[in-house]
Amino acid sequence: MTTRSNSTFLQTRQITEIAVLLAMAVALELIATFLIPRQPQGGSISISMIPLVVIVYRNGFKIGLFASLVFGLLNWMIAGFVVYVVWTEVILDYFLAYGVAAFSYFAFTNIKDKALGFTIGMILAGVFRYVMHYISGIFIFDVFAPDDQPLWLYSLTYNGAYMIPTIVLMGLIAPLIYTKLYEWLH
Image 1 (cartoon, rainbow, N blue to C red):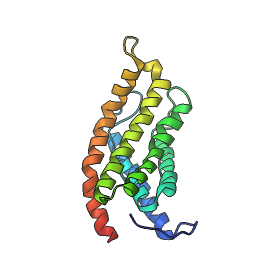
Image 2 (cartoon, one colour):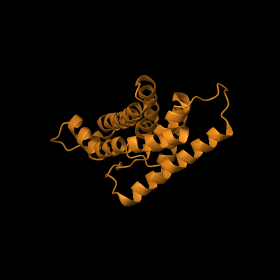
Image 3 (cartoon, rainbow, N blue to C red):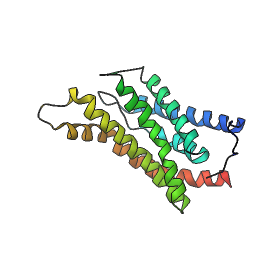
Image 4 (cartoon, rainbow, N blue to C red):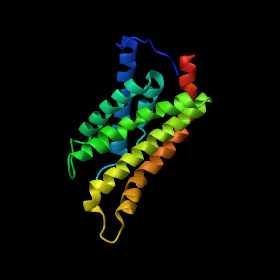
């Protein structure tokens, strides 16, 4: 992880890098949208969180949180500003679901092996996103659950159908990205 200036203002290079990584996240989301079928109430396998985790790794928790929230807004725009049930769904399924990527920072800073910390941070970001979608499924998407299925199981399986493969992909890609990121930083 690189250290940045203690200045309260972002440097031009940081702003550019964050913008490019956000654009990459949007591109990955669009590719996933066109190549992989979406679930009926939203959600698909996507590695768009990877650039968000890189932003967190390079810039820290606060800037990573801001960038992740911005991506949540962009992703909602990509989805067509869809609200299936209630507006709180937007907060859980877009803003918080992507904002949790910032918590990968704590894996980066608390695990001595930086490559392992990066990989665990990437996986944790995916798991935390899964948790946000799971909570949304229980409290908001309960109207779509079959009558004979417990609500917790419906949300777990519906969201797990796309989040578990997403988490696995992120975990497999993370060491490869870290190798290139390390070369770039050193």
